[in-house]
Image (cartoon, rainbow, N blue to C red; front, side):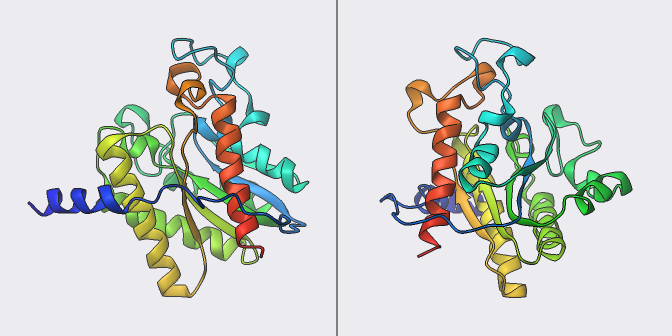
Length: 237
């Protein structure tokens, strides 16, 4: 009963996506890089595909057209990609629980790569699609996301940090992921007084939103990048 009540509340409470009106004004001046933490969505897999039936093969992939690199390009800065296909925070694609993002963040070679990024002033985290696909690992996911957000905050104290959701999940999976990420963001912000931002992304016009294997298309990535840029403008007033 409690789960059903929570689900009903979340159906009403999940945020639409940034602002209804497109903010006007300049983007913030970020002299540092953009760090992108994610999975195949962040890597732009399938973005160039003509429809949902094509395979996730190299000719249909485009990292530069993915939402994160587009944001970096709009800001006029470089980006660092810390993402792998099929990866989740605590549960990878197909219920694989080896070498998850939480595990990678404890490995010396991976943390050394983060140490070598140079100045980072914008962090875009989009994880959870594989964790929550036909699954609800909230009990494990929420503390792991809190830990990830705290690590990013401590490693990059001057950076603006976004915890993002979407756009590949639907139904209960989408609702539970949104609740888990927003809960983790609220907990870290309440504990430390930081201002990590939660932002729900969608793929925009559904008639052109899908590439190979239901991954976001280039128009969907354009739309997601615009949502992030609009939110950056709104906070730069």
